[in-house]
Length: 313
Ligand code: PMV
Image (cartoon, rainbow, N blue to C red):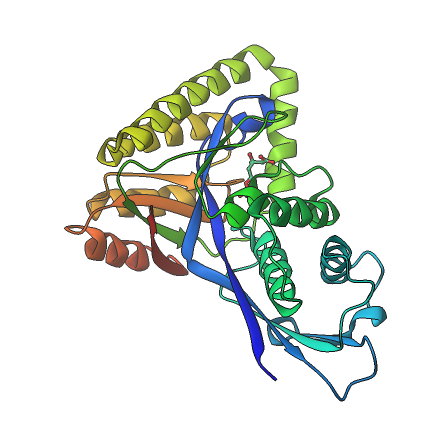
């Protein structure tokens, strides 16, 4: 039996985290060096309509209807079959593989969904528009996140940088000139919901102070958008540094993140900042060919759990 394989990238927030919760814009980009992969193989000898899901990384090997009705993997398979007009799926085995770390702001859940949706569409010999893939993945994001912003599924399904403001249609960004980021993991787990709640508590106590910070972050995002579209990414470094100073004031940095950011700058990065919820998780550094290796070494020496490069294009 032939195998039908689809992959989907990770995502990372480039500018605007936290302020985006308060109506300011943010920019997120695909991370193509990390991938989720779904492989669908027909199982002609299996009982009619039986779907088996295998994900070695999470020790999952289960039949679809053994999973809870609201299990994200079950939902994504059923929603996709429905969208494709298939009353049942011909018996098959879906194998999942991913190099995207889970729960670290890299969109691993949305990437798995998008890979499954595309691989199943290929298995059934049908095509789905990127927007439809994104909308299906969004339905599954709701199970993970309650009220997701829609960023992860959009960036990942469209494989494009996006500019977004809560409650408004997400815009894709054209990249005037490619640029390279290093992404370094602090190894510290930090649920986004925790930092978001802490920022909210601070904002409730001192709304004027936080609103002023969010305005400044929003202005940085606008400038960044213009530089990205005009093809002047080398000028993004200063904006990253400035955004990081404001995130410190918002209160979501940490000594560990600061130490990685300082290491990136020592190594010659054009700029560096935390990405996502903060406290732990990842930092991103803007590099070019001349300094990428040195920045990577500097980050590893400072204790980064992992460092990888991605080209935004
Ligand atoms: O950690 P991530 O990539 O899911 O990003 C969180 C971004 C926040 O602005 C902190 C929260 C949010 O919901 O936008």
